[in-house]
Image (tube, rainbow, N blue to C red; front, side):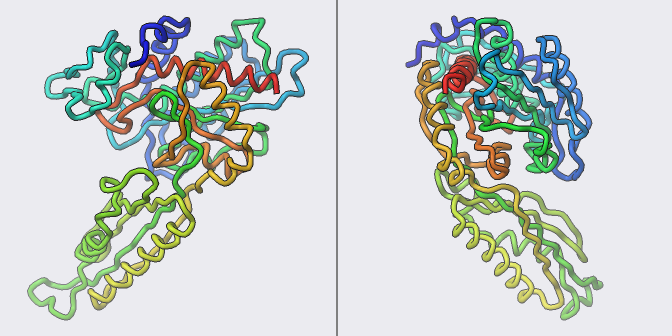
Length: 419
């Protein structure tokens, strides 16, 4: 069992918790159906808040660009100008799967490991979420059950902001050049389309968008989205034989043929999936959005071929009906490119150990902005930020793990300054 009391006695605990609670109250839900960046105007509110806070800390070179990216450049300590430039990154938006409006965070000190009533009808229970038992004695931040918490990724923002505040307040803290990036629309997978790559120089970057303390993620899904459009033929149902092609039935038939053993709820570890994410339509036209996820190029090629084959099978089942398939890349597995930059991970593992964490590697069953940055040539692994049950009403955050993430960040900055 972790010595939570010792970790929570560290100097950054109160500030880290306060920042998470304050940021969580700012609604920043993104919208995957909107193609502009940012997809929702509420994200500007947190972006401007962070800009103001950074200016108050003395950061002169900070701004919010036309796509809502907060970019801050912190010059090196004199004599360290030639050290590598490292980036620290977290995202502004929260998932649209559950409401992020009017979030009411609650700090539970000395959590007893038992069922916790969030509000009438909503109970965070270790009988359902077994890992909670491991956090008896920790301080945790929870919701009231009517919204998500938004620790994904306001926990990450709190970690980065607390760490950088400590660096800037300590005149003896030697460091190389640092870039902070707070990005919009990570949850939609579209935000990095607006990243100002030509104006931001980083030798390496770290996203703080992870879960349990010690988790370090250097590989993720390769991700594609398949959009299927089903075109039917209308007819009076009483005289439909041989005439009607029902687009609703076509879409339902397609979804039913997706392998149930390869769905999100049936897979874990290094197994990918098909995720029928949305379905809409009527008699003459219907649509289905399917997320395709796999860790290998071969597996992704198989999934794309399967989608096309199932679409053809639906056309054969429904004479007169047509199915159009549009498959688009979202992000790629970052493992190969990170393997080519071993120092980026070596220093991260060393920093985590120095901070008192027990680092270990696991795959991201999803993606981060770091995957897109890695594609762009900036190696960017993902770092734990203490979030749990994200994207849901039972989301919660571990204060001790957030503090470990803050100290890992500080150690990481020191190690890059020595390199």
